[in-house]
Length: 140
View 1: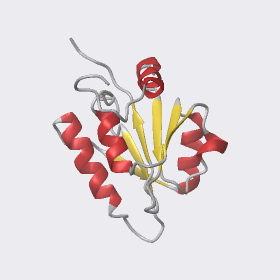
View 2 (view 1 turned 120 degrees about the vertical axis):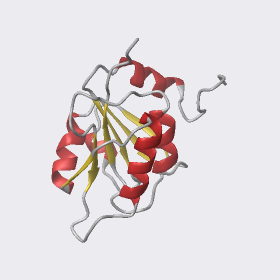
View 3 (view 1 turned 90 degrees about the horizontal axis):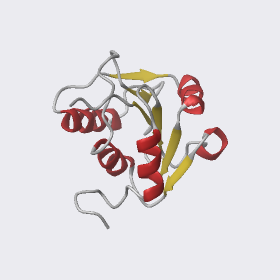
View 4 (view 1 turned 90 degrees about the vertical axis):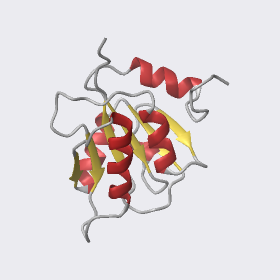
């Protein structure tokens, strides 16, 4: 255990987050997402919901402020999922400011996840609870 580091952030996950460079992306996905078939690097957090995982990751991961929307969520063709409201709150809290999040089609989300540096597969059971985060820089 480490002080002030969320215990969800295992050594493996911390190493992945550290190794990511500016502009690299990480996907946090729900339990229905085909994570094993699309991930280049896969971390499983099966007993964790996506909100908890996002909060933990965003405690240490800076978001890219060189792009208009450093976050993307999977769109539901039937309307905006309520989880998107939670994502926006979590992003704003982590960054201390509103953060733009785009909604993208399911198949575009799959493609973006295939290109991501890593995928975190959660135990989240809500549908369309999938989020991509673009890493930013730490300013001195």
